Amino acid sequence: MFGMHMNKRTRTERYPNLKSLKEFYGEHRAKVFLFILFTILSGVTALMSPLVLSRVLIALTGGNYDELVRYAVILFSLVLMIAVLSYTAEYLYARISNSVFLMIRRKAAYRTMSMNLSTVYDKGSGFFLERLNEDSRESSAVSLNIQRTVISILINIGFVSYITVLNVILGIVFAVGLAILMMLEYLRVSRLLENMKRSKRAVEKVKANEIEILKGIKEIKGLNAKDPVIEKHTSVSAQYADVKYKREIYQKKMQNLIDVVKGGIDLSILLLAGLYLLPQGMAELAAVLIIYTYKGDIYGLVAGLARIKDTYVNGELAAKRINDIIRAPKEEVDRFGDMRLTDPVNSIEFRNVSFGYTEDKSVLNGVSFKIDGPGMVGFVGKSGSGKSTIFGLLSGFYARTGGDILLNGNDISSLSEEDVRSNLTMSLQDPYMFNDTVMNNLLLADPDASRDDAVEACRLARIHDEIVAMPFGYETMIGESGATISGGQKQRLEIARVILKDSGVMMFDEATSALDKNNLEMINDLIAELSRTKMILVIAHRLSIMRRCDRVVVLEEGKVVAAAPHDELMETCEYYRELFRKNAGAEQKA
Image (tube, rainbow, N blue to C red; front, side):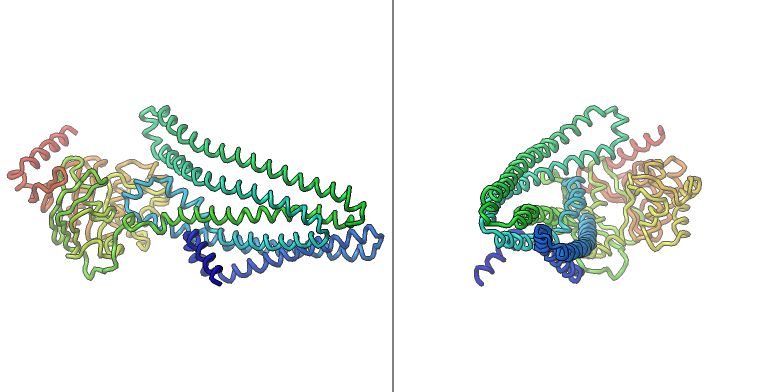
């Protein structure tokens, strides 16, 4: 008992990630039981086939044709039974594994969207794509594959036992050959599994590079940079090709060696039977034919034993890579609590907040400010001063490294994600539009909104007329990242989404930088009107809107150097006055 307990514990310790996947099989227990049952029945039925076939051959060689017909009918019935049972088992396998695959992907995708942006950017798109696709697929069927392999091994052990009963000498020949094959299979699988780890890492890099090419295709063309880009792609691809080449060569070498050993076993059977066993009357011809015909099942035993290691180790690798996302360390995930807000957000406060995208470079250094009630607050500073970082921290995209961020007096990390995300919305300078219709892109902000609500939001954002002029109006597909619409149209669609969501705090991060002067003035009027009832935070490429702000927070090198209304800053803050005048001059020239 103690030994069995230790073996079980050792397996669990060696394959902890596989164990963690059991949660996905909970709702499929009945189907898993039926899968095991039909797999066993199929194997047992298949095990009966050589027994019946031996009777057919004996009847044939003995001239007993009545018995030949009877056993031939039985053999055909067994073939039909095997086909039905095997199909049922495979049907259940496909249903269970596909369902588990979808559940793993769903959880991994949801968890990916819960990771902070620092982690997402650091790991790269290839890291996530490979885990969401290949690793999810591989890990979804590990449990079923192990069960099927174990059943197959047990069935094949039964067949080997049957061969030994038919003829002990041939059984010994097989035993020696099997020992050699098992050693070779073990070496093959062990080497391939190590190669698999390197291969997956190489594939991640290739996919990440190809995603960059597709997303940056406009820049590549515009800069005439095809040559350096293809050089990088070739270098990354060459690394993967090298790993793939070594794996394939080793696989072919080992497979050829295994085939030679199998050929030696086959030849030994024929020579031993033809030169010794049959002439000496120590074996019947029917028995020799049965053994030779079904020797593949014995080889299947060896392959099955190798697959146990293959399935466990490869499955553990895939499960671990999935858990890199599903069970990511807390420092890689958005920080939220479970506290709920009782009132809409009417107070935002930064207390000595610090943050850096990397450990050696700080972006914010002790930033403090407080915003109360509805109104419009602007944020001004040179590029890199920390304006967008403040919006990112408020949106929960990143985790601060020091200080406190408070909403209604509550630490933002203690509040539920739902409360933070529903109360604060950010409009980005370069918003992402999904490869879908205009309407579906709008409804991302509020899936329950009516069509009339979405249209009204677009009217307010001064984009409705241009949408109606599109080939299919609001049902027009706009391509990946809004490839078929202009930058100004994307920005106004993003503003329409923010309006449709209708949160109490709206943050506009250079959300009008691509607009022409006419649309800019109308959007600025809209933002000013919204500030009567909402908290509006603005970062603007054109600083003229700062005149309409109730207060302007001025940042320099990650620190707040002033905070006051525009007119007061023009009198008291030389840094702000210089920024504003330079910007005003640039606007006039434009």
